[in-house]
Length: 240
Length: 342
Image (cartoon, rainbow over all chains, first blue to last red; front, side, top):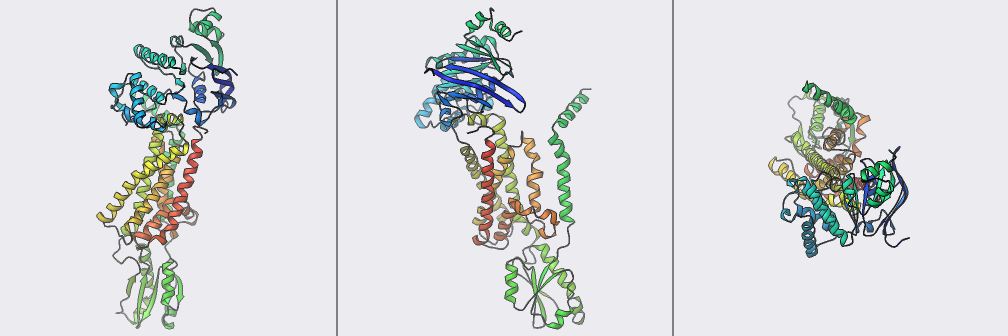
């Protein structure tokens, strides 16, 4: 096995009752990549990243992270996961939310104060540290969710639709934060159904109806399908 | 037209939520049935002891409507009262009858007195001026129903609110996604449950103290035993309510559905907690009692508050409450597997 493989998904299928959500997924994601999972809603993106985050298990096949089989509690320390919904305690302040989750990750005292300051700077929320989350705007909540998943300096960041419902300026800020983290060596997996966002990834997997229909860099995908945009490429690979 | 559209939409929504519909109909039926069975139960048959009565009198007593036991020594009858086998007994000292009652349940007291009065009617004809002297082992003739119901209600309300609040806050944790966020960290499932038990344990300790203090010292509820024992019992009961609330919340998708569980899980417990005499409840219903936590808490609370008993009388009830909590905790861990396997 290649040393710089971060994630290896081996023949993973998932069924809920009679409904097949994932079928025969094979995928390798390398260390230090920004990898995008692109597909319409219902394509199985969230189910797949939930498995990688240890929140779900495949019906068939196996997922390996850092050469170890998921789910595993020791691996979870090395992953940061941000779900589609903002998982925040609205009655608490931003600071209290950050304190709660950093304590769960075993970060205390001086280190905790340092990390809280760093992640809040990264997501540009330093001015709102003591505000109650209930008074945050949607964009601020999204950024706070991101800050929460960065507290423990994860080697792998799994982001489920991180910029959904966010205005273009803020989206660029968030992507700047991703590039920043990526430069420091963090591997990032992003799910999205927005084509121009997919263009920002190093490599992409196109997903449709629980299967991967193509993998490659955005340029490779456009070239292979003989198209000018990812949207056309997606349609071409989908056989329509 | 807008109103009609709205009405139609609401009807459609309810029709799709089959559980809400079942509860709208089944829950009132359930509660009404239980009330019917409880109130239309058989008359209570008092258990009366006759201690060393003169032959002539014993043969004249009409023993229908009571369970009669005959003793030759007063101590034996007293022992039976302590163990709950007897509601009261009659002695005959210096040719005048004396009655001793167990005394903690006013409804049993009045049933016993009523029977004794009618049984002694034929005797009183020959000796009309004779007054019967009544003494009580626990309580007194001026003990009100509230003194007897009080400990049960105290336990019930603590159980009810802890159950609801713990359940609803765990549902919030689930629906806001914070449970999933928590499970994406290396936290262990038992740590989540224990966090809840401790957090709410502290809150309920404060709650129980205030409610117990208020009932006893402000409302003047009968209090024969130690306040600390009352706190100990309510804390154990709250722990059971907490673990059960969290467990039940796993089967509800929102706060409303949690509330729907109240008439099914919480309210029926009150029927078996001694608020109504268990012996007059239909046989095909009364067996449920020993499977409900409130049954043991109410028994222990009454032991302490009405009968003034100490730790030896309540430790078994406390152990059983602890057993319920342990069982619910274990089931909670199993249910959490639904969200994360490890």
